[in-house]
Image (cartoon, rainbow, N blue to C red; front, side, top):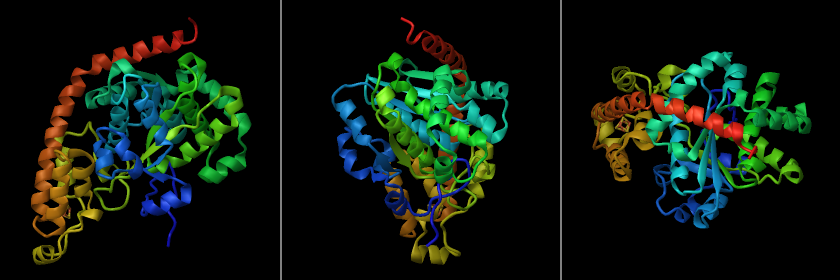
Length: 377
Ligand code: SF4
């Protein structure tokens, strides 16, 4: 069987999540779900499939201890559904405790290395991206947002880490890549470990919610945390992994690099509806076959829209799955319902996001002030 490769910068896809767990040592989320009083929709719908040391976060929540949730966005365009997945996890884990703090990095170094986007251009995109996460529910009182290129501690850590890795180590994790991408991986390790520096309260559990394809960054950072444990006391970061959403154009991964494969939170309701209307489905060739055999929800990106984002609740997801696989619903009506949900969401989101632009600016300014004064008192 063909092996899945994990490429955080590519369009690689995952076909077999169980195999991924055994190959890369990712543990299942299932046994830990009961430790969270109100599991997130990602947990209850099996979207978060894997984890590393998630128990440390459950311990911190139960014992009212501080922990950090670390995530970021590459400012290479509008917020897309993949960014929303990570943001949803981040917001959920932030909401579990008063002692939780989100560190959100604008990955402008990576945007430059991977996409050639200037730092000035990144700045403009970043503001809108921050307004998007606020509109999705981020609590700004428990969040710090910063640009990688401006955070000197991240840069210092990545310089220190660059002494501890060899070309061969990076090649083994990422394959042969340009130096800029290796550098951005070390910068990202700096992002993930920064919340454990003394000026932010010292070593603590840090959770990184990511898509399965980002695991190479987690493995590298955990390795670096162990290598530099005696210097900084780092606790290897925890991670929770979500499944990758199927592409509307068919294929295993919706990707920002293939715009038609999904849509962004900037797209108009009309444009997003068009993409859903022409989307690939798991339907059969004829109505008669679909009624007799049922649809294939497991390979259907329209079903993923319900399951990952837009269903009213878990019961609604179950109903769609049941009606599809039993041949009760047909693809045309199913798409129509999905379009209604997508439209409703986008119209509401646009309103909320536009009303939060000033708050996004304020959060960035407040974060900059906080980071500048951290460690100087
Ligand atoms: Fe997909 Fe809906 Fe068709 Fe089932 S009925 S295959 S979920 S579009």
